[in-house]
Length: 129
Image 1: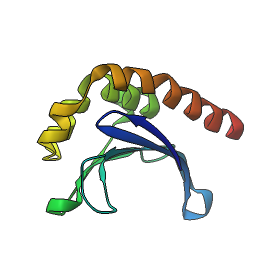
Image 2: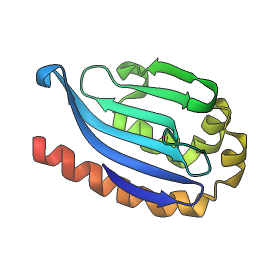
Image 3: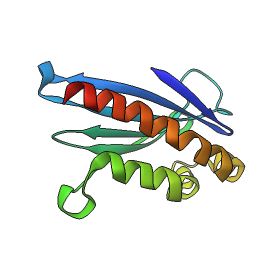
Image 4: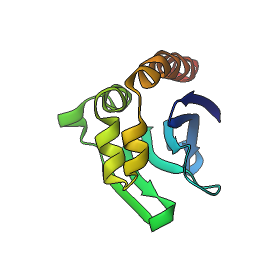
């Protein structure tokens, strides 16, 4: 997993292959740096080829809500994810009940991390194309 710090959060990047290769894709984790313990994940975007989805998580309150993406309405899962990280991250963190982290988000930190996330994802997906 590659980690990209962005102020109040850290983005974790990995390429996941599941079910013997039937499902695969870029996975982007959003970790809350101020959360105590080992499980700091608040959001996870699984930009999978067959069944893309994302999770609102918070281990401190046992939250793990999974929502499926609709290809017809949302289009490419990775492009959708990058857009949400750029434009909706604080409000999505509020839904995770991570209010302090949402308030501490500095958009400049997120904007600086986005090109690194995109470059990493493009490298991983082009290798498999």
